[in-house]
Length: 136
Image (tube, rainbow, N blue to C red):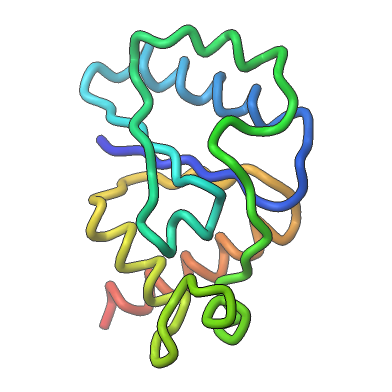
């Protein structure tokens, strides 16, 4: 099983603790799990930038840190114009398509998005898009 995490939106004290707890739980329950973190939220997903998380790490250290060790960004996958302007996608691309294809290429089974309303609304938009291309 391959799990990806990303944090998005504003810096909040709970982001690091959420990453730590998710990683601890997955590694303690599933011997075959691989966990990656997309760097700088949806930006990292669009650019294919990620890091692997090591199952030997002491994730409890993250419980006392604010912010996020994998970085944040404020990227909406439904705003192609902004994604093009910032260099996250090319002129003729659709951000939802790029993000969906990255998850498929990375063979992600589960994506945890950690953030607020916009982060999770964007996750919902991505899920709808994934369902559309998988069913097609």
